[in-house]
Image 1 (cartoon, helix red, strand yellow):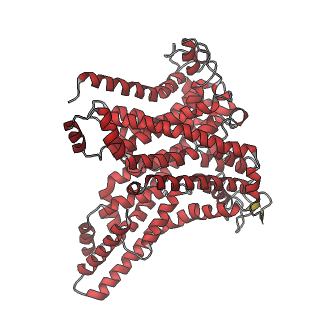
Image 2 (spheres, each protein chain N blue to C red):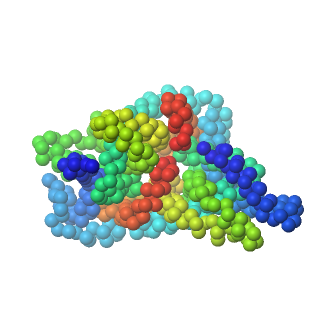
Image 3 (tube, rainbow over the protein chains, first blue to last red):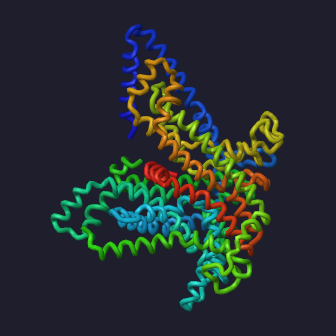
Length: 323
Length: 286
């Protein structure tokens, strides 16, 4: 996306600098160029240092630590080979946490995407109060997950909460939601779908606005129904956006932590909501087994990498424009 | 074009959807204004029978939400200022000045954007803990607690985001070259061109990055949770989560606390929607 454009810009700027000082051509031009480059390097240096220190080194360190036994308290470190990986995959709770993450993703991502695309299409018409609707759908995305999760926790309260009160009105005895192994995960999923709609809708809305209206006009001339227009024009043209939303949501979903941690602090009743990130958190800051946590985070990383590559393959080249 | 009947249906569908999105917020505020007896009685009421604004000062007495609030404000403001300053400089440099290795640097920065939080969180914690000469540590970072339980850990690691650099770079790229050339002929240095000529032209980008940074920082939970244990350094989100775990029954105080924690973001968002929307639609990445 930026490669060829950047090089041309570079070349152009260089010529421009040379042309700007025609009086003393070579020496002054080179000096000016050198001063500019020095200034530029100084300006980018804080960013390089911070990102290397807080993202570059930690990423590599995480990979290395995953293959070691590191004792934080004693400060000792020894090579472990694949030992950590053998250990974690022998742990039924870790294996369940992978399954829970997959289940959570399977239910949140497609559902929120379907709702988001529907709302985006509805909102894409010239409508009074459009900005207000958009704000309402986007509000959950802006607000803190922790605060939001606490409000939902209150609504899920089995005896005096909003949900069971409403269900009680129609004669249904609601479940104990977060303390019921069968209902804890669905409850977390509902919160995530609710919170995830806004951002997806916004990306879809931006994509919809780039569809040329002539296409719909031509379809109108041919007498196409709205449903036909949606499936023949809108949806195919939304493919790059769909790919983009899908990948971003998938990556977010595999890293869900806050709503799970707040709604079900111990991973839910009988580990019913234990997801991979919660296990990583417990390994690192509950058991202080940093190597184990790093090994687990590497498994999560591989999952995300594989998912990204597969979906890239599936959607082909047209998606490159979006990333 | 559109028949009025279908427009009514459209409005109805969208309004029901929008209502479902804001019900939790409404329920939060209404709950924060109910008395303890009313909130614990069944069936729940929609509107408080007696509007109990006293829950707010009571909640502040019950847990130091005021301190948490202040801490979050300091950190979010610090992150915003630092991120705008450092990322705009880097973005300018990467967009407008040719130097050796620039493309490689840019690709490397894009790569850091793709690295998931959990891949780096454990070593980040270990680095903060092993910061030499801080918190009783020796020069090798041994012995003490380093940056743990300090403002350093809360502010420095999150001060710069690759996303902000990326957004700034895109905006700087869109500016015409003639401007910097004119300034250069006038004898202005590179930093002057950045600060006095180019940056004033990308104010919308600054607003966008500032708002997204503030929002992320205000809502951040995991990092402050793991690097602080001291009550006076807690941020509002961590304080709320801790309050819920220790005082399960005081829903009216908890809802007052969550209202205090969410209100600034809601107000900020409603006032500056345009920039938020622009930022999220352009980047799509968070």
